Amino acid sequence: MSDKQLWKGRRPTRSVRAGSLIIGGTAPVSVQSMTNTDTSDFKATAEQTKALAEAGCDAVRIAVPDKHCVGIFEYIRQEGITVPLIADIHFDYRLAIESVRHGADKVRVNPGNLGGLERLFAVADVCAERNVPIRIGVNSGSIQKSLLEKYGSPTAEALAESALEYVRALEREGFYDIVVSVKSSDVMTMVEASRIVAENCECPIHIGVTEAGTPQRGTIKNAVGIGALLCLGIGDTIRVSLSSDPLLEVKAGRYILDACGLSSSGIDLISCPTCGRTKINLFDILSELENRLDEIDTKGKRIKVAVMGCAVNGPGEARSADVGIAGGNGDAVIFRHGEIIGRVTNSEAAEALIREIYNIINED
Image 1 (tube, helix red, strand yellow):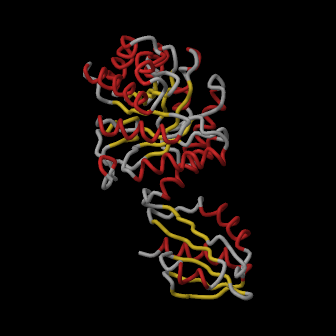
Image 2 (cartoon, one colour; image 1 turned 180 degrees about the horizontal axis):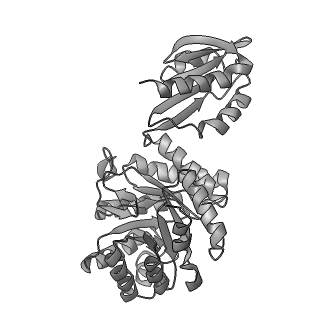
Image 3 (cartoon, helix red, strand yellow; image 1 turned 180 degrees about the vertical axis):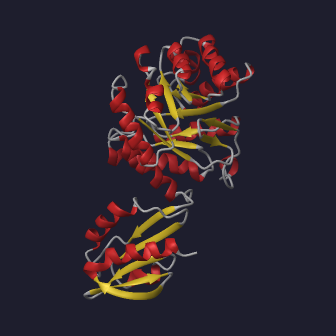
């Protein structure tokens, strides 16, 4: 595959620390999201931040549109919420500085709209004093005019070169706690720009498709873009941007990591697409399981669970599953690693499967 050959394993990067979260290096790929409350409503923003953390979000980004909002970071900490907090800054570099002083664990800036490198350096000086990393977040709307003239449009090359210029400028000033992102609403542009950045710097990379759209379309766009990069070994932290409840972003992000084999614990649920041989109400069973499996603490174990409609697909085709059920004429079989261990009525299938999952969790 020439110069685009797949990496073997994760791309090596420097690591940075944002509060309790390590990004890059050998740390697991983390999942981020962003509050969509009015930041000036501290109570609502704190409540949503807490909900995101409880849903498995590793870091929460919060927009800081004006000076009245910088106190949100202290307020959230006073509420006992410990998830790392990221200040999202546009236009006014002073808001970045004040956010750090008020407790932000990380700052995301778009240098193209800050008003010059000196303002970026001023932010970096305060971040360096408090060991706070900066994410250089470049998108197609903030590329330097010179690069737009060079490339003719916001191409992947223009995005990557823009981000790398800012990274190198900070590094010349002695600041290295940098995360970089090059986002586009076009999947292929984002993937190629991120690949170029990965080949030309050692910074951890934040990946995701920006302005991806509705939950259905946006999840697919992000799964394709984020998944492609993760399979190349590129990506240290992700955000699935959706025009929806940010809790859906966290769930989608976790599912993408699962699909790429980057989750060391939790439950991987597989099921057949159903056909004329299906002997069980698969959809009702899956609906019940979807609502319950995310709440199960697997105690660090990774458990593959299969729900199959007939004896053709299970237990034979689902032999790799730790546990599963397969529908039959009036009853369902329960199997572990392809071996049948019991039978239950179809109506009892979901509950029996959950009991067996807990048996696996509690095994030594």
